[in-house]
Image (cartoon, rainbow, N blue to C red; front, side, top):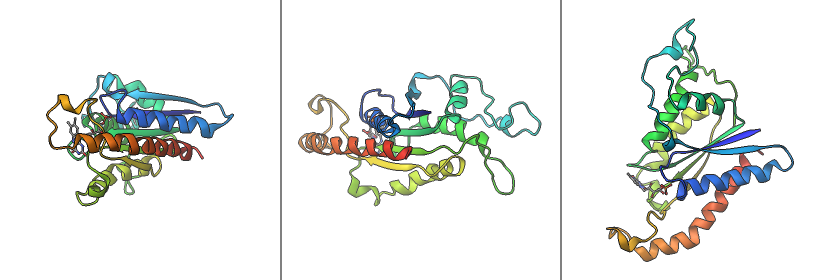
Length: 217
Ligand SMILES: Cc1cc2nc3c(=O)[nH]c(=O)nc-3n(C[C@H](O)[C@H](O)[C@H](O)COP(=O)(O)O)c2cc1C
């Protein structure tokens, strides 16, 4: 079995990456004696674009039917993640949405499997379990008010259609800098941020671990 975590953050050891690693630890724990491999794919290490609307993936009789035809760093990754046994996507929220890098990846991964027939049927090779971890500055109590869950639901619905309904978790009010005093950050209370980091982030890590456990249950 192989489970991948897709890191949509440019940072490899901050909020999103940490929670993705915890989720993979949960996967390993749940796998018990089953052989399981896990890997984090850091999207910002790769050179690629989003969908270019070439429609090679939809050309009847074409050699790329049902597959993305663009040959860049993501080409091989798409094949391996589609054949995997589970996917956990992780993203910081940038301007109220997932990062451009993750969205570009999802366009390339999901669109070739969406058939333009009457039912918009799906031709993904496997119905694998999925999960989505979002990290953001916005506190939990403001998320509904500013419409985040509704916004994120669009991509979750497409993932559900192509693979399965993702398990979802949010990590709010995240710590953005190691030392708030070194940056213009008067929008925030350094003290409140530090306290949230100390108390809430370990709980979020536990939540991510449990999400990993539940992914392959
Ligand atoms: C360019 C940029 C835009 C951001 N926009 C938002 C936003 O719209 N809403 C929000 O809640 N947080 C926003 N944030 C904060 C990040 O989502 C948050 O700090 C996240 O946890 C960072 O993840 P990381 O530590 O994995 O990089 C933004 C951060 C950056 C760098």
